Image (cartoon, rainbow, N blue to C red; front, top):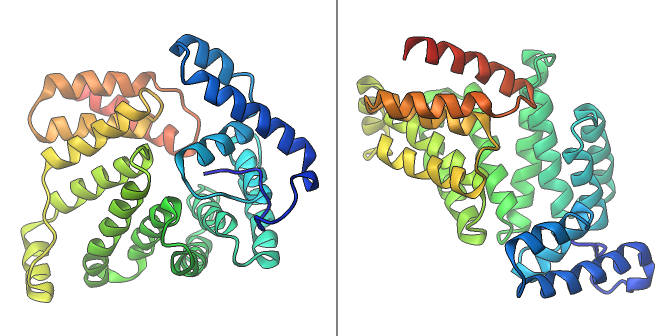
Length: 297
Protein backbone atom coordinates (compact mmCIF):
# COMPACT_ATOMS: atom_id res chain seq x y z
CA UNK A 1 0.00 0.00 0.00
CA UNK A 2 3.00 2.22 -0.15
CA UNK A 3 4.72 3.91 -3.01
CA UNK A 4 7.63 6.22 -3.43
CA UNK A 5 5.77 8.22 -6.05
CA UNK A 6 4.43 11.66 -5.15
CA UNK A 7 0.69 12.44 -5.21
CA UNK A 8 0.83 13.35 -8.88
CA UNK A 9 1.71 10.31 -10.96
CA UNK A 10 3.11 12.62 -13.66
CA UNK A 11 5.93 13.90 -11.43
CA UNK A 12 9.35 12.96 -12.78
CA UNK A 13 11.27 10.29 -10.92
CA UNK A 14 14.15 12.76 -10.64
CA UNK A 15 12.06 14.84 -8.23
CA UNK A 16 12.74 12.16 -5.63
CA UNK A 17 16.03 10.59 -6.76
CA UNK A 18 17.02 9.00 -3.44
CA UNK A 19 13.70 7.20 -3.08
CA UNK A 20 13.58 6.26 -6.76
CA UNK A 21 17.04 4.65 -6.75
CA UNK A 22 16.12 2.66 -3.63
CA UNK A 23 12.80 1.68 -5.17
CA UNK A 24 14.44 0.56 -8.44
CA UNK A 25 16.90 -1.64 -6.55
CA UNK A 26 14.08 -3.05 -4.42
CA UNK A 27 12.03 -3.82 -7.54
CA UNK A 28 14.91 -5.72 -9.18
CA UNK A 29 15.54 -7.75 -6.01
CA UNK A 30 11.83 -8.40 -5.53
CA UNK A 31 11.56 -9.89 -9.04
CA UNK A 32 14.72 -11.94 -8.52
CA UNK A 33 13.37 -13.28 -5.21
CA UNK A 34 10.45 -14.99 -6.94
CA UNK A 35 12.78 -17.75 -8.12
CA UNK A 36 14.78 -18.10 -4.89
CA UNK A 37 14.33 -19.98 -1.62
CA UNK A 38 12.41 -18.65 1.40
CA UNK A 39 15.66 -18.27 3.35
CA UNK A 40 17.22 -16.23 0.52
CA UNK A 41 14.14 -13.99 0.32
CA UNK A 42 14.10 -13.32 4.07
CA UNK A 43 17.78 -12.36 3.98
CA UNK A 44 17.27 -10.13 0.95
CA UNK A 45 14.19 -8.36 2.32
CA UNK A 46 16.07 -7.46 5.50
CA UNK A 47 18.45 -5.27 3.44
CA UNK A 48 15.65 -3.04 2.09
CA UNK A 49 14.13 -0.13 4.08
CA UNK A 50 10.56 -0.95 5.13
CA UNK A 51 8.94 1.93 3.28
CA UNK A 52 10.79 1.10 0.07
CA UNK A 53 9.96 -2.60 0.30
CA UNK A 54 6.29 -1.88 0.91
CA UNK A 55 6.22 0.45 -2.09
CA UNK A 56 7.56 -2.37 -4.24
CA UNK A 57 5.00 -4.82 -2.89
CA UNK A 58 2.20 -2.32 -3.54
CA UNK A 59 3.17 -1.96 -7.18
CA UNK A 60 3.62 -5.72 -7.65
CA UNK A 61 0.27 -6.57 -6.02
CA UNK A 62 -1.84 -3.85 -7.60
CA UNK A 63 -2.70 -2.20 -4.27
CA UNK A 64 -3.27 1.58 -4.15
CA UNK A 65 -0.22 3.76 -4.80
CA UNK A 66 0.53 6.25 -2.03
CA UNK A 67 2.40 9.52 -1.60
CA UNK A 68 5.83 10.11 -0.12
CA UNK A 69 4.18 11.89 2.83
CA UNK A 70 2.04 8.82 3.52
CA UNK A 71 5.16 6.65 3.55
CA UNK A 72 6.88 9.04 5.94
CA UNK A 73 3.85 8.92 8.24
CA UNK A 74 3.86 5.11 8.15
CA UNK A 75 7.51 5.01 9.13
CA UNK A 76 6.69 7.27 12.09
CA UNK A 77 3.81 4.96 13.01
CA UNK A 78 6.03 1.86 12.89
CA UNK A 79 8.61 3.56 15.12
CA UNK A 80 7.22 2.65 18.54
CA UNK A 81 9.32 5.39 20.16
CA UNK A 82 7.65 8.10 18.07
CA UNK A 83 4.97 10.05 19.96
CA UNK A 84 1.40 9.22 18.92
CA UNK A 85 0.50 12.86 19.67
CA UNK A 86 3.23 14.16 17.36
CA UNK A 87 2.13 11.80 14.61
CA UNK A 88 -1.46 13.03 14.97
CA UNK A 89 -0.34 16.66 14.71
CA UNK A 90 1.86 15.88 11.70
CA UNK A 91 -1.05 14.22 9.89
CA UNK A 92 -3.47 17.03 10.79
CA UNK A 93 -1.09 19.52 9.19
CA UNK A 94 -0.53 17.38 6.09
CA UNK A 95 -4.25 16.72 5.71
CA UNK A 96 -4.90 20.46 5.62
CA UNK A 97 -2.30 20.78 2.85
CA UNK A 98 -3.48 17.73 0.92
CA UNK A 99 -7.17 17.09 1.77
CA UNK A 100 -7.61 14.62 -1.12
CA UNK A 101 -4.58 12.48 -0.28
CA UNK A 102 -6.26 9.25 0.77
CA UNK A 103 -3.13 7.77 2.36
CA UNK A 104 -2.90 10.77 4.68
CA UNK A 105 -6.65 10.73 5.38
CA UNK A 106 -6.99 7.16 6.62
CA UNK A 107 -3.77 7.46 8.62
CA UNK A 108 -5.16 10.61 10.25
CA UNK A 109 -8.25 8.64 11.24
CA UNK A 110 -6.02 5.89 12.62
CA UNK A 111 -3.86 8.37 14.54
CA UNK A 112 -6.95 10.01 16.03
CA UNK A 113 -8.24 6.58 17.07
CA UNK A 114 -4.89 5.67 18.63
CA UNK A 115 -4.68 8.85 20.71
CA UNK A 116 -8.37 8.54 21.63
CA UNK A 117 -7.62 5.18 23.22
CA UNK A 118 -4.54 6.16 25.21
CA UNK A 119 -4.97 5.96 28.98
CA UNK A 120 -4.06 9.64 29.38
CA UNK A 121 -6.89 10.76 27.08
CA UNK A 122 -9.99 12.05 28.88
CA UNK A 123 -13.47 10.83 28.00
CA UNK A 124 -14.35 14.16 26.37
CA UNK A 125 -11.13 14.20 24.36
CA UNK A 126 -11.78 10.63 23.26
CA UNK A 127 -15.24 11.48 21.98
CA UNK A 128 -13.97 14.56 20.14
CA UNK A 129 -11.11 12.61 18.50
CA UNK A 130 -13.36 9.77 17.38
CA UNK A 131 -15.91 12.07 15.78
CA UNK A 132 -13.10 13.99 14.12
CA UNK A 133 -11.82 10.66 12.75
CA UNK A 134 -15.33 9.81 11.56
CA UNK A 135 -15.56 13.02 9.55
CA UNK A 136 -12.20 12.37 7.90
CA UNK A 137 -12.82 8.72 7.02
CA UNK A 138 -16.33 9.42 5.68
CA UNK A 139 -14.83 11.80 3.13
CA UNK A 140 -12.09 9.29 2.30
CA UNK A 141 -14.51 6.45 1.59
CA UNK A 142 -16.38 8.66 -0.86
CA UNK A 143 -13.14 9.45 -2.71
CA UNK A 144 -11.51 6.01 -2.67
CA UNK A 145 -13.86 3.04 -2.85
CA UNK A 146 -10.97 0.84 -4.02
CA UNK A 147 -8.73 1.35 -0.97
CA UNK A 148 -8.79 -1.54 1.55
CA UNK A 149 -7.43 0.59 4.40
CA UNK A 150 -10.17 3.16 3.96
CA UNK A 151 -12.86 0.48 4.30
CA UNK A 152 -11.00 -1.09 7.21
CA UNK A 153 -10.81 2.18 9.15
CA UNK A 154 -14.31 3.27 8.23
CA UNK A 155 -15.58 0.14 9.98
CA UNK A 156 -13.34 0.68 13.01
CA UNK A 157 -14.32 4.31 13.50
CA UNK A 158 -18.03 3.67 12.91
CA UNK A 159 -17.88 0.91 15.50
CA UNK A 160 -16.08 3.17 17.99
CA UNK A 161 -18.54 6.07 17.82
CA UNK A 162 -21.30 3.57 18.54
CA UNK A 163 -20.32 3.97 22.20
CA UNK A 164 -21.97 7.41 22.09
CA UNK A 165 -24.99 6.74 19.88
CA UNK A 166 -27.02 4.13 21.72
CA UNK A 167 -27.94 0.53 20.97
CA UNK A 168 -30.35 1.34 18.14
CA UNK A 169 -27.67 3.13 16.14
CA UNK A 170 -25.04 0.52 17.00
CA UNK A 171 -27.19 -2.34 15.75
CA UNK A 172 -28.11 -0.42 12.60
CA UNK A 173 -24.44 0.31 11.93
CA UNK A 174 -23.37 -3.29 12.57
CA UNK A 175 -24.43 -4.29 9.07
CA UNK A 176 -22.51 -1.42 7.51
CA UNK A 177 -19.41 -2.13 9.63
CA UNK A 178 -19.25 -5.74 8.51
CA UNK A 179 -19.84 -4.80 4.87
CA UNK A 180 -16.89 -2.42 4.90
CA UNK A 181 -14.58 -4.97 6.51
CA UNK A 182 -15.65 -7.58 3.97
CA UNK A 183 -15.00 -5.05 1.20
CA UNK A 184 -11.55 -4.43 2.63
CA UNK A 185 -10.77 -8.15 2.36
CA UNK A 186 -12.12 -8.32 -1.18
CA UNK A 187 -9.60 -5.65 -2.12
CA UNK A 188 -6.75 -7.15 -0.09
CA UNK A 189 -7.32 -10.77 1.08
CA UNK A 190 -4.15 -10.79 3.19
CA UNK A 191 -5.22 -8.21 5.75
CA UNK A 192 -4.74 -9.98 9.09
CA UNK A 193 -6.16 -7.01 11.01
CA UNK A 194 -9.46 -7.14 9.15
CA UNK A 195 -9.88 -10.87 9.82
CA UNK A 196 -9.31 -10.08 13.50
CA UNK A 197 -11.96 -7.35 13.40
CA UNK A 198 -14.50 -9.63 11.74
CA UNK A 199 -13.77 -12.22 14.43
CA UNK A 200 -14.53 -9.64 17.10
CA UNK A 201 -17.68 -8.61 15.22
CA UNK A 202 -18.89 -12.22 15.21
CA UNK A 203 -18.18 -12.56 18.94
CA UNK A 204 -20.09 -9.36 19.74
CA UNK A 205 -23.11 -10.40 17.67
CA UNK A 206 -23.12 -13.91 19.16
CA UNK A 207 -22.92 -12.43 22.67
CA UNK A 208 -26.05 -10.27 22.20
CA UNK A 209 -28.56 -10.97 24.94
CA UNK A 210 -32.03 -12.31 24.23
CA UNK A 211 -33.48 -8.87 25.03
CA UNK A 212 -31.08 -7.14 22.64
CA UNK A 213 -31.99 -9.60 19.88
CA UNK A 214 -35.70 -9.02 20.41
CA UNK A 215 -35.18 -5.26 20.32
CA UNK A 216 -33.16 -5.58 17.11
CA UNK A 217 -35.86 -7.74 15.53
CA UNK A 218 -38.51 -5.13 16.33
CA UNK A 219 -36.39 -2.29 14.95
CA UNK A 220 -34.89 -3.95 11.89
CA UNK A 221 -36.87 -7.10 11.19
CA UNK A 222 -33.81 -9.30 10.78
CA UNK A 223 -31.05 -8.68 13.33
CA UNK A 224 -27.46 -9.60 12.45
CA UNK A 225 -26.48 -13.19 13.25
CA UNK A 226 -23.21 -15.06 13.74
CA UNK A 227 -21.62 -17.82 15.82
CA UNK A 228 -18.52 -18.58 17.85
CA UNK A 229 -17.49 -21.00 15.11
CA UNK A 230 -17.52 -18.18 12.56
CA UNK A 231 -15.61 -15.91 14.95
CA UNK A 232 -12.97 -18.59 15.43
CA UNK A 233 -12.43 -19.02 11.69
CA UNK A 234 -11.71 -15.32 11.28
CA UNK A 235 -9.39 -15.15 14.30
CA UNK A 236 -7.47 -18.25 13.22
CA UNK A 237 -7.09 -16.78 9.73
CA UNK A 238 -5.58 -13.66 11.27
CA UNK A 239 -3.17 -15.85 13.24
CA UNK A 240 -2.24 -17.82 10.12
CA UNK A 241 -1.30 -14.64 8.24
CA UNK A 242 0.61 -13.08 11.16
CA UNK A 243 1.48 -15.90 13.60
CA UNK A 244 2.51 -15.05 17.14
CA UNK A 245 2.48 -11.28 16.66
CA UNK A 246 -0.79 -10.08 18.22
CA UNK A 247 -1.44 -10.74 21.88
CA UNK A 248 -5.12 -9.77 21.73
CA UNK A 249 -5.88 -12.03 18.77
CA UNK A 250 -4.41 -15.07 20.50
CA UNK A 251 -6.31 -14.16 23.69
CA UNK A 252 -9.61 -13.88 21.81
CA UNK A 253 -9.03 -17.32 20.28
CA UNK A 254 -8.62 -18.62 23.84
CA UNK A 255 -11.84 -16.85 24.85
CA UNK A 256 -13.81 -18.36 21.97
CA UNK A 257 -12.60 -21.87 22.80
CA UNK A 258 -13.63 -21.28 26.40
CA UNK A 259 -17.08 -20.13 25.28
CA UNK A 260 -17.28 -23.41 23.33
CA UNK A 261 -16.35 -25.28 26.54
CA UNK A 262 -13.02 -26.47 25.11
CA UNK A 263 -10.85 -25.75 28.14
CA UNK A 264 -7.81 -27.59 26.78
CA UNK A 265 -7.66 -25.44 23.62
CA UNK A 266 -8.49 -22.34 25.65
CA UNK A 267 -5.52 -22.95 27.94
CA UNK A 268 -3.24 -23.69 24.99
CA UNK A 269 -4.07 -20.40 23.31
CA UNK A 270 -3.96 -18.41 26.54
CA UNK A 271 -0.43 -19.69 27.10
CA UNK A 272 0.48 -18.69 23.53
CA UNK A 273 -0.98 -15.24 24.11
CA UNK A 274 1.04 -14.88 27.29
CA UNK A 275 4.31 -15.28 25.37
CA UNK A 276 3.56 -12.53 22.83
CA UNK A 277 5.63 -9.44 23.78
CA UNK A 278 3.91 -6.43 25.35
CA UNK A 279 4.25 -3.44 23.02
CA UNK A 280 1.21 -1.24 23.68
CA UNK A 281 -1.04 -0.09 26.52
CA UNK A 282 -3.68 -2.48 25.20
CA UNK A 283 -1.19 -5.35 25.45
CA UNK A 284 -0.61 -4.53 29.13
CA UNK A 285 -4.34 -4.79 29.86
CA UNK A 286 -4.73 -7.96 27.79
CA UNK A 287 -1.74 -9.55 29.55
CA UNK A 288 -3.44 -9.07 32.93
CA UNK A 289 -6.63 -10.65 31.57
CA UNK A 290 -4.67 -13.63 30.25
CA UNK A 291 -3.08 -14.19 33.66
CA UNK A 292 -6.54 -14.13 35.27
CA UNK A 293 -7.89 -16.56 32.67
CA UNK A 294 -5.03 -19.02 33.19
CA UNK A 295 -5.52 -18.93 36.97
CA UNK A 296 -9.02 -20.34 36.39
CA UNK A 297 -8.16 -22.98 33.79
